[in-house]
Amino acid sequence: MDSRLKQLEKKQKLYALLKEQHEAEIKELMHYMSALTVVENNLIRSYLHTLLTDGLRHIEYISRVMADIEGATGSALLTKKGIQESINDERASRDALLRCAEMADDRETAELLKSVSVDEEHHIRILEHLSELVESAK
Image (cartoon, rainbow, N blue to C red; front, side, top):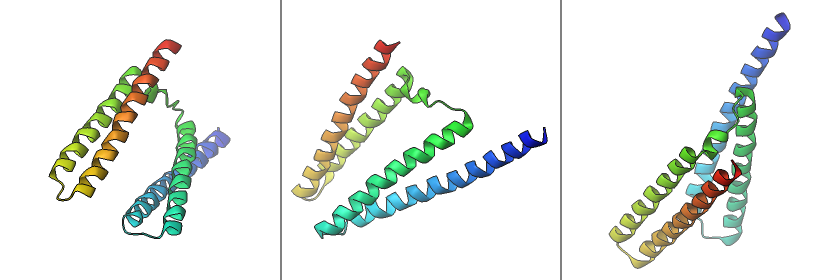
């Protein structure tokens, strides 16, 4: 019983450290995204994109280890309900971006926001297809 308790304590410490790292990665991503809005040098922008891509991958790895510790499967996100929630979120983002584009003072900003809204529409289509795939796999 003593070894089980030690193992549990070890997992709890690991989980706490992983959670801290997860939060640190998110903070770093936010910092790099903010920097992208003001940096014009293409090489620096490329480095920032690399840091963002790596940070997303790190978050994925850390989240996977945390889920393993929790005993979670993550399959809740791939349920019809979970996918529908994601679709609803994407639709809300798309609609908000279009409203923002209408309010933009200059054409360039409006077109940029519309471009992002097109990406959101693409995400909706991907999620709808994912929903079909998940349903057909059952």
